[in-house]
Image 1 (tube, rainbow, N blue to C red):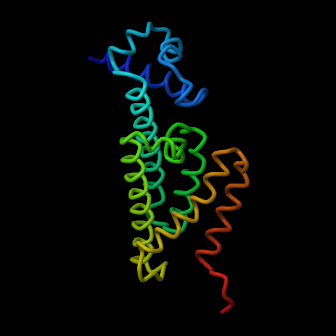
Image 2 (image 1 turned 60 degrees about the horizontal axis):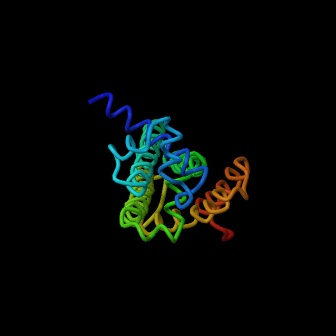
Image 3 (image 1 turned 180 degrees about the vertical axis):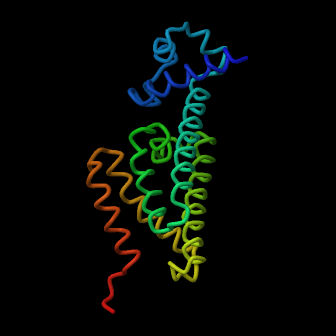
Length: 195
């Protein structure tokens, strides 16, 4: 059983690289087989076809993202301001590492796959819930003064998503991401009105 799991993981990793390099549409089962140094029939032993391989890649990248996020959130749980910033920095830095996952979330043409729509919905809700939890922690610690944490969480997630697209396309350098994120958080935490 362990050997089968290892082989499946090797196929998923090779497919991840192939999908990143060629994109979903141009990647073939032959490309995946070549990347694993296995015959195509070996790939079909584990997966019915390219769509199923792609789904496994997307789920694998999603799990990787969630593990990284959970680790980061554990270390800063008592500092909601730093935690909120760290959360989005990790997200934005992971865009290039998890190109298939973020590409699938962004690409409107991927809506043809039911599993992509499910992942999009879960990702959106999970993101809002995470930010809402951070905000509620800040409210409980009397750091944030917010009446409707869910509404503010949606606003924050939406504003930070505005940075994602240029990052994904490579129009914003990694160093600039932090600067833009700081500007968003300055606006969120301090507002623009003179007091």
